[in-house]
Image 1 (cartoon, helix red, strand yellow):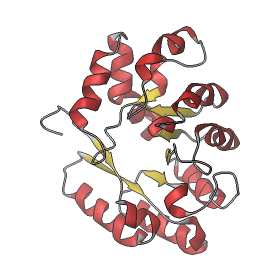
Image 2: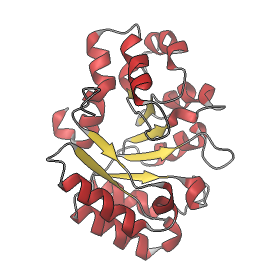
Image 3: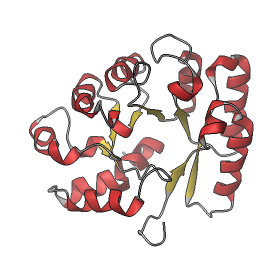
Image 4: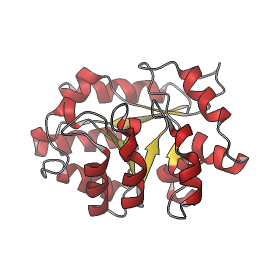
Length: 222
């Protein structure tokens, strides 16, 4: 973060903890965030198959400082539209949390089903993790059009090829994208360089690189 000039980052538990050991993952990121002097903001995770216990885990994570929900329907074993996630989304809505949902893996984690899900919670911001990359990035822009409370994630997806289209569309634009390194799965410096090279104005770039996600985390900043 220091080397790339990143002041604040959202951090999530690792894949094992997203899928199974939710408590250990939430405690780990909460401890890291508490020691970071405000530079790390923790996501909370809970496997929805655990029912009431999943909601209890989100309550514990919220009390420990979590400010957003992280979902991976592939690792956790459900379909985005099968209703299993609904109680967790109700919790996120009540808590005022944005919801990050990883996409890109068929058949259960794709941009267009996520857009349909997001429309059912119009007051909750959803971040389309990885924006369908790699094979389903072509669905990312239509998904953004379908759900105005959906935001694209810049990692992997070749947004450079659709920025002109986004800029022409009054419904969406570069400010509907949020920067993500998706570390440790990418080279963060390369992900940042792509955004710095985009042909967008300074205001749009500031939104992508942090302004938008900060407003989603704190609506008072709107």
